[in-house]
Image 1 (cartoon, rainbow, N blue to C red):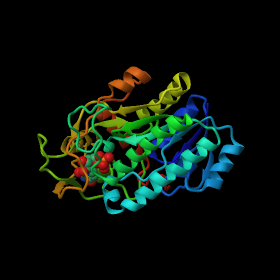
Image 2 (image 1 turned 60 degrees about the vertical axis):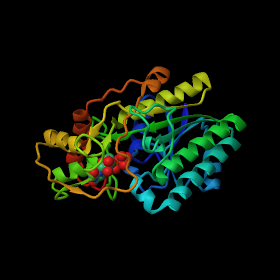
Image 3 (image 1 turned 120 degrees about the vertical axis):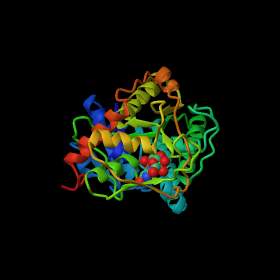
Image 4 (image 1 turned 60 degrees about the horizontal axis):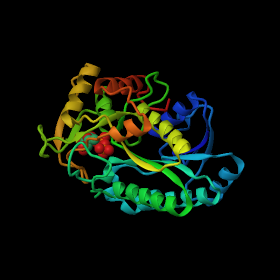
Length: 328
Ligand code: UDP
């Protein structure tokens, strides 16, 4: 397969690029490097630019034999999306529109799309099934849902086959420590806790302890970034083999509260890690837990690193050896 990965220099993108290359796939990357890191990509052809740049997309599709696309490039922070909704609609929805338009024009008719559990909003039941209602509680989830719909209509009209992967909470790092998670500023729970363990922050803020959960803090389903990478690989194979589109949840089916995650990080790092309750963060649903049965049955997906301690220990390995991320 010859695969264009948009957003391939980002956290999940770079792990997927590494995973695909290890399996002998031919990969090129489009990334504007606003959030992504060149150093996260070894020996990969990189086009630096934006999805809105149609002439760059033309150049990519004419000078490479791209047969499918994995589309990560997007803004992806729940809290930020509530503050800057228009930026999210522009980068995510309009950016994807240009990509999809150019794919159709160049007859590249297979795409795996990076979607999210945020498409569900407050779930009507847990674990969440793919057919459950999608009522996002923040612009981030809404933009991803809009793109899923664009893809479904493009399938009917132009035969563009898509697999939309709704990730729950991506975490962890390459077990060998070659690449890992590095956001500036960091906003994700596990890296923030590990930065506190390294002494780079004096404490962790727990965003709300008055949610309707056992300990009052939000519950999430944490899934290892390499298990996500594997799902993208399987999704591409599935589209190629069956020519069918689909939507799949990707999670472990187990929820951990913010307090439980902090406790796990205390065990893994051997550090006390100060934590303090702070106000709720806008747009956060109380509980998000996946049913990933459909991905297991239809894609043959089998997560390899399901234990939260293992996920945290891979992240901790990366953070200890790269306390300043890729900036070394
Ligand atoms: N969270 C927290 N303190 C932090 C960062 C995150 O309490 O400093 C909470 C956040 O409110 C959510 C959970 O941890 O309930 C996971 O947040 P994250 O940003 O990692 O992922 P999201 O669920 O937004 O995709």
